[in-house]
Length: 252
Image 1 (cartoon, rainbow, N blue to C red):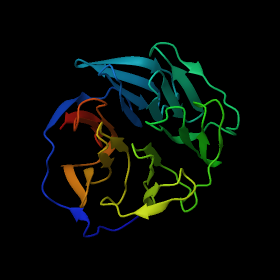
Image 2: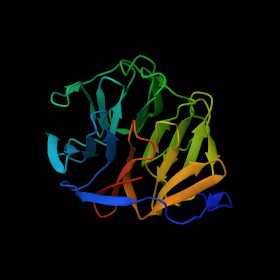
Image 3: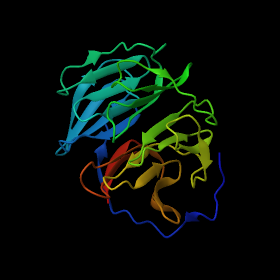
Image 4: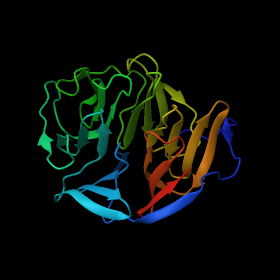
């Protein structure tokens, strides 16, 4: 874990927040803001949709562990503990069995927003992998300098940089397509979920709150433990998150 540095800004909390309610699940692993405006929450037993103050089960299956939710512009991709599936209508989910993916214990998953056919995954045993055909096949990613992770979060920004947030090891970035990674000073001792605004602003959730990356360092926007984090795909600065007590929040 990386210590605080002078690059971290403490300018006071800057996020107006509204609690949306307790999530009706025993945990939350992932949060995605769907283009329709609905929030999708991945949890240990499926996926819950929140829209207009109402929670609705999209999938409710015991131990259908949706650790990661990703959107490629047409499909919802679900990756987790022995789960890899897609849905085009948020009603029917189809299991995927791509070539080159040796196991399906997928701890992290993300899609390049510039090239939605490029996907990145972390498989618990076999490490980091990349697909260049929309998840139909995968190949090993060198990921030099990136430690093997337990809890991890991946994100590709609009410049093509790959960010890896590892709760036990810190924050890392790759600028060469995942061949190598270097550590980035992080303001949080247990960095967690990542989110990207429409303009490309990077947000980080962790043990101590929500952080915004600025030109001069990190700025804390909200204080408290963050389990899952999402940015609205059209509205700049609008965030949603789940805190350590299982409450869903929205703020900007």
